Amino acid sequence: MYYFFVFIASLLVDIIPFFGPPAWTVMVFFQIRYELNTWLVLTAGVAGSAVGRYLLSAYIPVFFGGFINNRKKEDILFIGSKLSNNSWQVQVFVLLYTLVPLPSAPLFIAAGMAKIRAVHFIPSFILGKFSSDMVMMISGGYAAKNAINLAAGIMSWESIAGCSTGIFLVVLFFCIDWRILLQKKRLRFSFNIWK
Image (cartoon, rainbow, N blue to C red; front, top):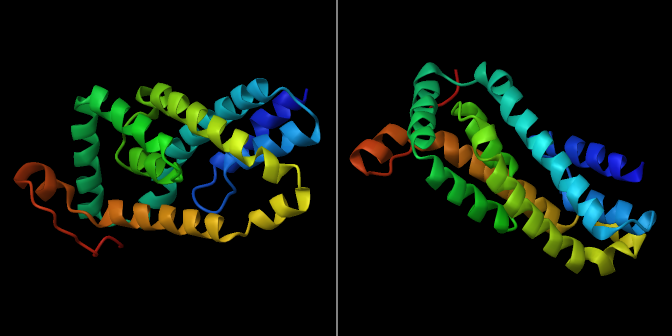
């Protein structure tokens, strides 16, 4: 029964676009608090994260769509069509991205806005997420045994830096002129993205 709660809690923190705690902290909490099997917690947590991120990519175009001007929407759809045509490259990128300790929300926000079907790269996300969360659970096990330190860690400089990095990556994604970059191989920024 607790593994189901791990799944639901991981889903809930990963359906949030910005300010949620990392799913691995939820997994570590349940694993330590209820003395659960690490591998089953990891499996349930990563499955919940995958569903949460999939749902994030599905609802984010509706959420952000009303705020972004038509030129930027066309630009984002253009990058989506380019990435959809190179599915193996997207798979590799998603795998490498999830192996590094960066928030995965910007990846799914970008995919949702670009109309890239998240189901195409969920396998790479699961593989990378399982690997990176395994490392975080093992290395975070000591910290999790000290519940006070874990609660204080939610508002640590690491969580603030991770959240700030996530917001920066989303803003960067929206400000790049993707047509110019992909067609003319020139990096150009356009900060006029709002209606």
